[in-house]
Amino acid sequence: MRPVVMATLLVGLLSAFVASSCTCLAGETKAPDFTLANLEGRNVKLSELLAKGPVIVDFWATWCKPCIKGFPALQALLNKYKGRGLTVVAISVDSPKTRARVGPFIRSKKYTFEILLDTQGRVAKKYNAVTIPRTVLINPEGKIAFATVGYRPSNHEQIEKTLIPLLPEADTEGGDVVE
Figure 1 (spheres, rainbow, N blue to C red):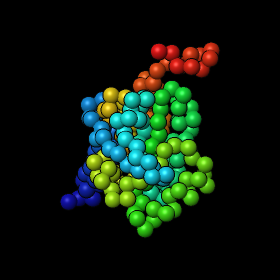
Figure 2: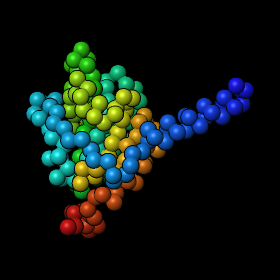
Figure 3: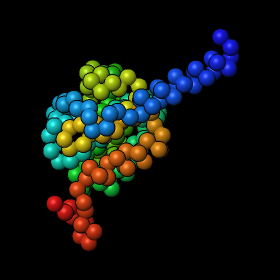
Figure 4: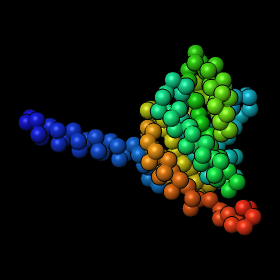
C-alpha cells in the first residue's frame, strides 16, 4: 500500500476512534446502576445520587497522570454546581496493591468529591473504562448525557456545556434553586 493511502487510512481510523470514545448516544444509553464502597467503607449507590440531580462519574487511578490533571476541573465543576444538585464521583480503579495510596492522595489535595473504590474493575467494565480517565455525565433520569476518554481541558468545557441544561435554574438574587 502506498504511504499516502496508508496515512489517510490511519487518520480516518484514528478520527473514528476519537469520535467514538468522546461521546455516547446522548440521552439514549442507560447508565448501569452500581453500588461501591467509599473511603470510609460506606456503600454509595448511583441511583440514590441521581435522585439529587446529575452525576459526573470519573474513573481514575493514583498512577494515572492524565487522571490527576483532570481533578482540579472536576473539583471546580462541583464547587460551581453542587448547590444546584450536581454530584461528582471519582471511582478509583487502583488494584488492591495500590489502593492504600488513594485516601492519602485525595486528602493531601483536599478534593471534596466522593471517592469510590472499584479494585476488581467490575463497574469500570460496565462503563467500558478500558482507558482512563473515563468521564461520564449521567442525567437525573439515569441516562448517559456525555462521555469522554482521556484528559483535555476541552472535555471539561463540553461536560459543563452539557451539564447546565440538566440543572434546575438558580435564583439569581439569593443563589437558591428555583423549583
